[in-house]
Length: 331
Image (cartoon, rainbow, N blue to C red; front, top):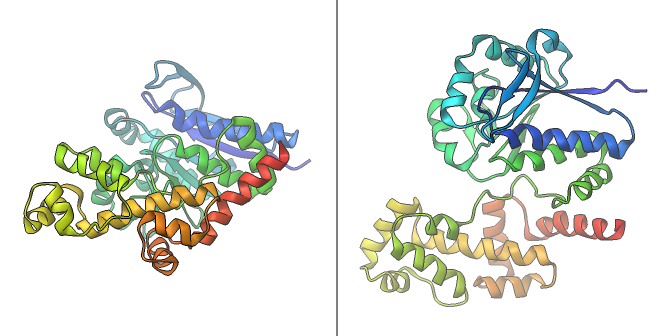
């Protein structure tokens, strides 16, 4: 019988519970799917016993002292809000253990703002990494040698795996199970947990339209909704500026200031988000998807899609549709 793969999850008071429990459940469900203890999951903390979470309940942890760092196969650092996370970073015994485990483990992973814990070890230096969208700028500011990916839901770079906000830790854990035991087992786990199998890491954390609707400017929020509903229309800067009751020059500057992108890039992003949704459905050919999303043709869509998501529409569809077909066949 193979030795169980040890998953060690260092926890601290005030952590985001789902960052830890979500991936832990994926690995636990993998044990059920495999009918053996393929993974041994341990919550560890500076002080053993119950550790309160931000959700109001506590998790039970073993002492760091009884889990040697060299025994850890996969380290998984969860995140939390700013104050609990800062306290964790000041916890010398906890950070010393994480530092040692990150260097000796086969995989070093983080969920959400747990990326700050992992980054503090130096192991992410020169690597690409993800974190919650609200923390990407701060992670980049504090660790300029990390290539922070502001969009992907998780990133794998060598032995380091980092995921974005909260539930994306489940997506990352499914990918880890797939790496260890194959796609069929990971899909079985996803079905057991009733989650989508599986969002690829390059999928974005949020849409361009949602980002626009989140700003305080009602004009941009309303414009974003109108753009989504009129993708096949002429959406040049003059048209958008007129809808926003601004001059083209002022509108261009305003959008840059509020959203950090040009009007043309915003429109392309909204069209790409729509194209991605239609590709997921697998009911339209590429030409129809391009037409509905407002692209001039399939070639235009392919170039833009590959530039934004790092994969062609055909490859993206294959990733998603093959998973859905296998899931349906299993059912």
